[in-house]
Length: 248
Ligand code: IPE
Ligand code: IPE
Ligand code: MG
Image (cartoon, rainbow, N blue to C red; front, side, top):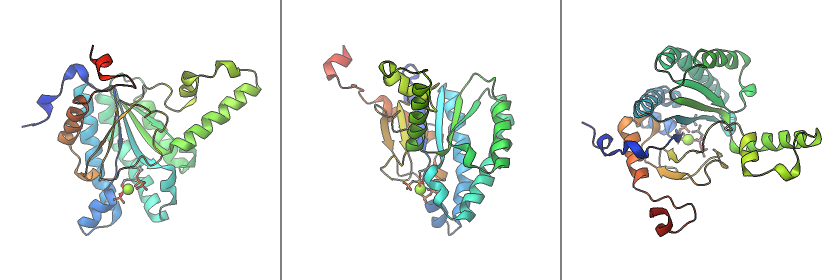
């Protein structure tokens, strides 16, 4: 029996939800286990969240799976995470394909081991024609990396005569980011009781509603997603205007 699901207003669903999946290490420690055990158990949460989002009819789900800064973790953890990532994605791809989920990534996958990146690319190809939920995995991603890359391309296009200074506006900048094809998230969730953004989607979350929960990622279930959505729907999004302006 779902306490929150029935409270969701289907006509006011966010189109795009982004999640900072945090707390795997602490979850494992609590269990007296190695950090990787937490990552392994986080897979269930990814599956549940993806399924819940698809069932609700959410169009975009972006999951922060590995940050640029995460490359600085001990090599054993990085290697284990890369293996787990590609293994899981390969295992789940047939289900994603069947459920009309389109798998996408944002981030600097050139930093990944070539074999991992190639295998990932194959999975992406297998869901390329799907039209349901867009599942966007942020891998080797950070917002400052992305913005730096965007500026590099813009300057280069400027030099080549393909971009005039006068044509640069907010839309142009959005179009140079790796999220160019996706709307900005309306809701950003972070688990594990940390109240920070950790270099995630800085440009895109300018007016996103932020939701923080103490739940550690491996414990996150459909019900937790529903709860976040219900909370989101109770908020008044004013975008700088007055309350009177947005309610009329
Ligand atoms: C999030 O869990 C997963 C990744 C960053 C890859 P953590 O591994 O950061 O877990 P904590 O924050 O140490 O508990
Ligand atoms: C953010 O979590 C990155 C991911 C969830 C992939 P971290 O655990 O790396 O963030 P910090 O270091 O606590 O800010
Ligand atoms: Mg963490």
